[in-house]
Length: 250
Ligand SMILES: [Zn+2]
Image (cartoon, rainbow, N blue to C red; front, side):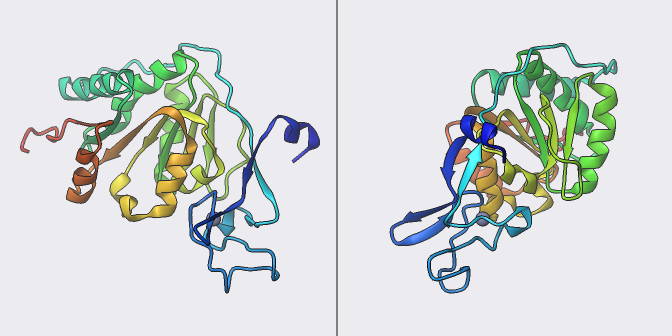
């Protein structure tokens, strides 16, 4: 990082000590103090090392996210079915109310188009939006569709992609979220059920770090996982948008 950037960046601890234990600030993993060390004094995080080594004698730097200039970005001229319209509206309302949402939508229900309005509304308000999914193939497919359906520049981030450039819309693998700190007003996690997200503390931490404090997270899932539902229902800040599937068979 250049000195110019360092001057405007927020300095964060790389590894934090809490109650005698050391924890990686980026991914939240507990540091194995016997094995994850470079010298007697310097610890590092092995859990997120593929994104660059986090070490205790260095700092992390976060560049504060600036708002974007609001713009109309939706090129898509298709129409939503009434079910899709309801979900789409539910997402917009959840965000308006400052809530996070868990959205059940079965595969083939046109999940992508149902996100379009809420994404476009946020970008129109100058906000920063990220759509993240654990699956790289889904990322690439989404990018291919959304760069036609949206007129704004879009960053695509995965293990082998080009470096990040600042865009109002980012499509990324969930793992790439580890690179962001309080960067997004709206974070949509697609295919939450593709891995045990709730029980994956690294990705949970990544999501928490990547979203702004007052931001909203929308979780899209195709298969209802009882565990996710249970956890979400306990939280007041959460709403569940349309538990029934689009066949109305729930
Ligand atoms: Zn880490």
